[in-house]
Length: 430
Ligand SMILES: [Zn+2]
Image (cartoon, rainbow, N blue to C red; front, top):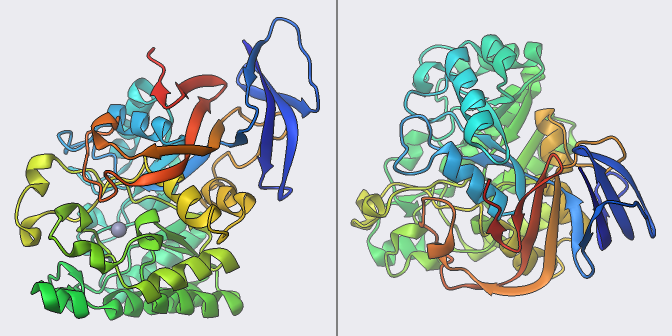
């Protein structure tokens, strides 16, 4: 089976350029690229006016399976990914049971092979049950396919234990993904602590709850030589700590989520529970610093922290609602509208943070359209204006604060291993 993608603007994160050329796909691999490529008997795909990029990778997704299938499954979550232009996702281990051993990692890999339409890379837990008491079997999990380790949502509060886990991670040449939140400082808060939380009478989570943990984890990474990745950076102070650490050569990387470079705590006014997320929406100054960090390379990756919940779970008082919002199906629109159209990032920078950087960090294929590479390709229509309508989501989760928002830029086609899985915003049934 072969496919010729003609006339698109090809974004190449490796060379750092955009060029008009055609891409030929044969048997699931990139077979060549160039101007005016021709091949008889090939299906032709007209990509004029569109961006052709390596398949997007979202390294921070909650697929909820096993255990929370009412929120999302590997079946629905990978379809949401395909609709959002992603050809691969890394899924977090806070399932039920927690993905803290090789058998569960293997079962996720197998289920993804059977039910999934995009590639799924499991993240294993750092500690058993993510309880922060004893280290999980990271080596066994890595053998079974875990690409990174994290106690996302349940940060390892014991620094001695995290230090040992980092020493072990370094030996395994894997990366620790850190959800930075000092639970004692967060102290059961519901939103960013500041002027708005005071007005609303909602208990706040101070910026320091994140920043002290970013500082701690950077120091431990520096001491152990472990590769550390800071998840969903939300505060200006975290960006500054990261910038300083990187300038000293600490092996630390970081990601930002679209909601953290787009929204502020002002969105919580009205008590819409879809704005309840952890870490919380912060202030305009934080948003500005995150954008600056994305632009100057302090923040390497854009990841969604896609966190689906049922309507029933979110349809309660703000205090009682679970943290999290869905993100897979709005990410490209938000990146293009908020970052690219406004000149914060060039198209190459944006695509690099959604392809090459997460691929390198996790040690997985992707980020390139070079000859011989696997044909994971995303085609984006950068000029397509659309309105977010959660009722069309492939995800089971409809918990987004962006419902009704007008965006410009949308994934137009998703190709996984040479197979078209999404075309013109619609999933291809098979
Ligand atoms: Zn998290």
